[in-house]
Length: 406
Image (cartoon, rainbow, N blue to C red; front, side, top):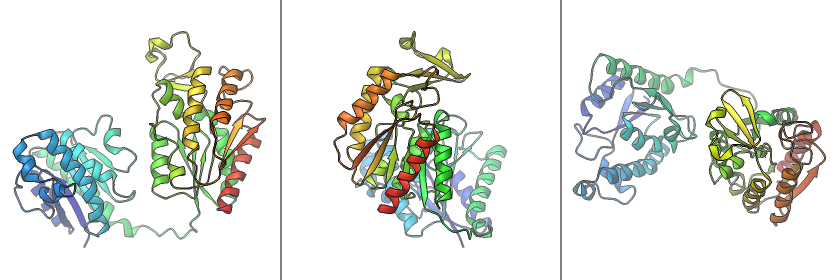
């Protein structure tokens, strides 16, 4: 019999979660009930709020006495994030489901994100119809709109609860019904790509696949870079082809596709062989052209499409980008290679193209060469545009050499 964890506030929504518990039992799975509320639950739980708080060294009784809702939510959320992966590792459940508003969603989704990719996770939420990046992060949580508030049992909420339960039960029970993939497992390579570096990554990908690797390509859109780094940290990859580090341009200048200050750290911390470059560091991303901040009026703007506007990075911005990248790559613990394409870092940073920038490239490259002082970082300048076949094949071949040498 499979077991599904049900996490939620059994004090304020006891009737609703008891209904969900009954649905699971009716479908022949074992509910594993985790109480995330502050007060006493409406029915006994397998994991109490006291246990959740204790996981992060807190006393639930003391929290109740303080009558601080924000503190209680933060403590229980952190406790869930620590405890739930431990319970999964102990074999306590096979999948997890929760129902909540903004508070309940914020409380449970960090724990879901902490579970391995592939573990079924369903979050029925009033927040699911909007931007859910803060809840999902780089995980595989299934966000399901609750349509109505999850407080109360009515014709609509029962329909949604039933569908959510059927979904999680199907995920858990039917996995064994799929044909087993008997194909030979290949070492995985992570590659970063943007529209303007696609030809390069496609050619490198073809070479790597012809030589026995499977390549997972991540679109460098902020979320893409974060997801790639999260999977690197999870130990999925034998090598990394991080040729498109454009997210640092957005991080430095204030574009909409930044991936955060930890971008480019994962492969280094995991000591994974990598070949890197400065793909698309010629551009900062914004939405439609009328959304570009007024402070950038007069800059070199390129309307990529109706919803995306690109802005050429300046000489000074390239200096800062180079310093940021150098600081990350200086931490290398195993040999890696940085490739610098002298004829352009993107499709539109090329002779005759709108972002062609000789001085900008020169500043970026000189900054990197000046600031990288780790002998494990090999720097090669190539007389190519990043999308030239020779550049792509050099990157792919060098990555294979680094992996095989390890």
